[in-house]
Image 1: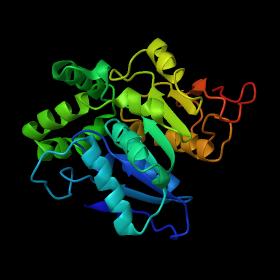
Image 2: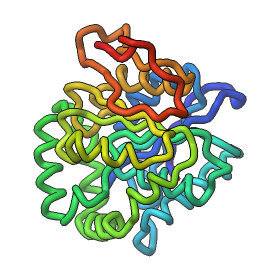
Image 3: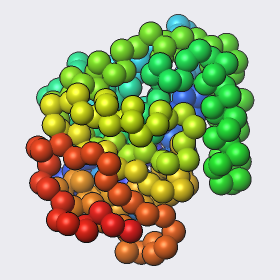
Image 4: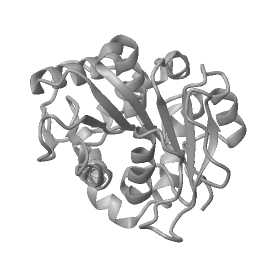
Length: 269
């Protein structure tokens, strides 16, 4: 597996960044690099993706979770916080389900793969609309990844995602969990559905929305996302990034009671 690693000392808390569908970890670097001063960041390309080796058989979500834990084993990492985008979120949910003693916290950015993204033609339409909402420079990063991944792999991986119980695994998480959504993301359901799902959890999920963001938040809004992750990791109230004034407003839409309550006005833009 090809991977990128920050020069942080080994004793720093480990943060593993997990990429989305058909992509490499390259587009996650803007956020990962902003967190590298505090965390030992690892950004791999999962098997069959990006610059990692091809695999003989098609992998599903549990296979990718197993690959992630083997990767941590190879690095000598016992526990880590996992930060995922899109398809990376189901992989993290499976990782937490299968290996609960190996994960400290979960950060799910634009989680995808549920009923709202099915069937394939609907997902392709959502991805097309999202492309028009992302920064133009993102296409220069992800297009080579999509070409390398190929159409047959896309169809197989989409089939694996549609059969994976994403919502069930999310509801089974027993660790502090942060979900970050963009209010311009066509791959995400509306606020009512988000509230419905969040309300079914065991009060351990914090849901934050970034105004003006679409799906690839790790690339398009790295300052705001890194700020939210940092606050979540320290159990502090969610506030806007002071270094990005006026760019995008960050606000909570759900907070479980297992999280310290935000002070009035702390989530304001």
